[in-house]
Image 1: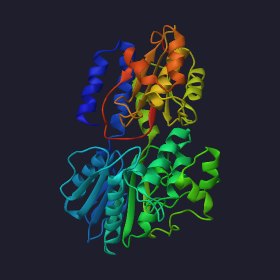
Image 2 (image 1 turned 135 degrees about the horizontal axis):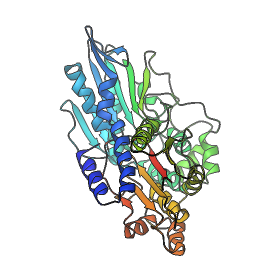
Image 3 (image 1 turned 60 degrees about the vertical axis):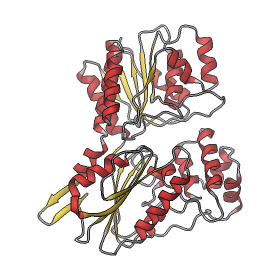
Image 4 (image 1 turned 90 degrees about the vertical axis):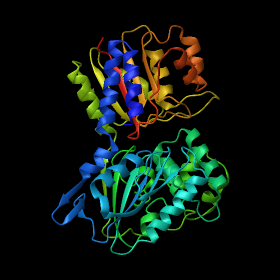
Length: 427
């Protein structure tokens, strides 16, 4: 977590009543558990023979580091603190300017829609991998957000095509697994293709925003894709996605991108943290604060509005429930907000007039195209449900929550392990 985010959490706690401060304290604990620099340092260990990465020795020729995603800066710093001179060169691709290690080139690119810097980053990553010697190791540091931040369109497609496809996918309400399945079909780097061009060994360390499957995070540039029940064309039909890129996928008997080769035999991929890492820390904080708190074992998924109803119904009176995962919102209006703000407003309507509280927070500090990370609401947030429902139906949660003083603004946290929800019915 950045110092700025920590300071803003302190400010939020000081301006909220004690009951809400407990929930914000749980957010703080969750972010600390998902701190990317510490996670990488703990995955690296020194021995008499050198340095081990997840048990794999760094070769004498050294390591080439590629860090991409919203946690890339912290992950690269953690690697540098342990590996030091074992790193020969590197590339850091993320969504914010910052102090990258001196051995790395920093590229700041677009999210959630790829931009020209995303394409530059992908070609720089390809050059880095293909330029390695056989005795070197590629240390890939992957985190959520990398799908947009590092992208190169497959032959026959342009950046405009990919931008249009990504915008349609995001607005469709499709789950992230389906979105990434389609993204892999139009990319030169996703689905293990980056590792396929690497002559050296590959080790991937992952801070995951999408569960425990290494192939899903950032669409897996160094990890072959998982088996799929539905191909990209079927998914495009399921979510009514049009546009030139979608038409090309439908018209082809195979994905638009080159076929995936097997990655190097020595490849390893390790998940360092995911949403449940953060969720366990949040639930533990609430328990230590005197609440009867549990972590829901089922990941958040589906439409945010329905997920809110399920979460509220599953939480008994007198208890608190922590949930992690990622919901979706099918955008039906022209308002401002994000999936966590949408969830917070939906919850505020449901709990109006009660003593209950609800918090929804994007652990990267960003929720949709806004400056908020989510919302924290209680039974007094909504007095008249009619205007609240209008805002919800228009996907316009941001202005309503802002007027109610219920937005959570932390700025970028420097990590990304999906979303954290807390239902508090402790009274």
